[in-house]
Length: 430
Image (cartoon, rainbow, N blue to C red):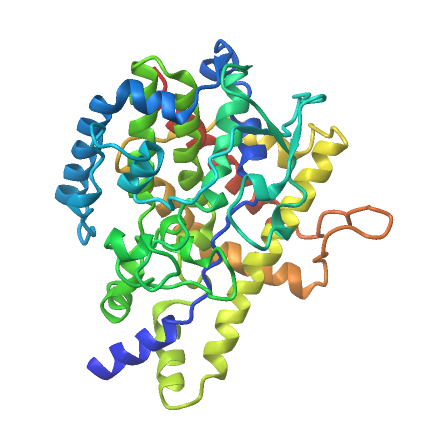
């Protein structure tokens, strides 16, 4: 058993961990929440600086963050405790913005720009455009060059939907990178998350993977063999940010209420992507054991093939979904099943009210259960030669793949994205 555990652990050590899910969360969130009465009928909100929020509510925030930390220590097995030196103490001098981010144990270098994204049905003509480098901390920004960011200023009034939808994409802008002790920078040395458990070092954003992935339902043998797979922390972020959102609404800071809400929705939406809920979709435990044993004696071709297969399928389906959604929105094709699925609320009531257990017991379980079939459908689609890379020279995307089952699987997953976004929003807003 010890030899088997070692072999399996070594096999999983190289698993693919794409840190992005469903590409642009702002577009999906805008579609999912546009018709929700609590958002649709909300009064415009005034943009407020973070410094103003912290100055006004600093003492109450100290109590809230301490209560959250106590909750994590009592309820999350294996939780890496926040060092006491990182506590938010508003009476301390210095940079309050940085101290607050450090208390949350997020990347203290994030931009936290005041911005909105280009969203369906919203006209930002006349607003100054922001470059991606004004919003994200990454050096390689090609993934985000098609996004459109517009500057806003404290004091301006914005639709609630614009705030929450724009914020829902924000955790992918660098919130969770370089937080581990073997990452660049000083934050990882202070935050007590230990060494990065997994991630693909080829990508600048790979260190955020353990915060955007939730491996909660693997076989016990997998956890015993590769315990680092249990070191995933989206529950921490959801609890932090939805708690901050409730606090901000209750204390009269709706801008930060909607912005924190958007941050929390991001991690929920990430776990509606099956590749963020299962380590190697399409590979059961017996198959993994066999591949691991072969790799342990130097026959690693099956291991490399399995990792490459999952990585390619994940990447291709994300690319397809993102390109297709942008094109449908540009053409105003709101009748498409892909677009309608985001706002389809018919199954919202089939789920229990969203609470602290929902991310693990409902959202990720649903995705885990769908992972193998989803992976198989993508494999069938790719084998049929239907995949496309972006647009043709005529800027025309190829028709939907001739695979009705894959189309239906994507629509089901998008419905999950929308339903869980709305249920979490209902549970958070006053």
